[in-house]
Length: 232
Image (cartoon, rainbow, N blue to C red):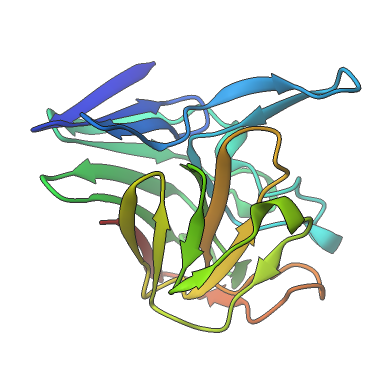
């Protein structure tokens, strides 16, 4: 199901399939590059754009057997509550994470959009997690991250930043302040198939594998944790 959220000149579109934020825009145009399927030069089809949550893992699943970025982005979420400018989605746990129900809330106000992921461990065993959000930002002719010009034409790999509660991104005629005190390790990535660049807050990088790993979150039995991401 598709849900439209509005506040002033801001509009966000949420799809319950994958809990995707498929677009976020204002009267000047797209802030988030719209979700779509892109065909590469060799005929391969890639889903790109929008913003999705990565849970329980960001990046490869490693020995867990989970898919890249986990199961949140491929699952059908339920609508728990909604209004003109917000929606809360819910999802039961799956597989080894059957005891980890999740909620995902998107809310827009006059100046910002916030995504909030909440995970609860209702079981008897510790659950290893390392969530993230994966936004694709619409880019113009230039990109500046934390005051440093970024050459997108020379870029060909994912980079993980040092710990920081926010990033300042200048692109597409805008200055965006990205805030995530709960997920302070930022992945910067693009495959340059279209006009987007990803600056993604993560709890600890690729937590389920050694590559680009910073830390892992351990959700204790009976514990609830919340992870938020704001685009201002």
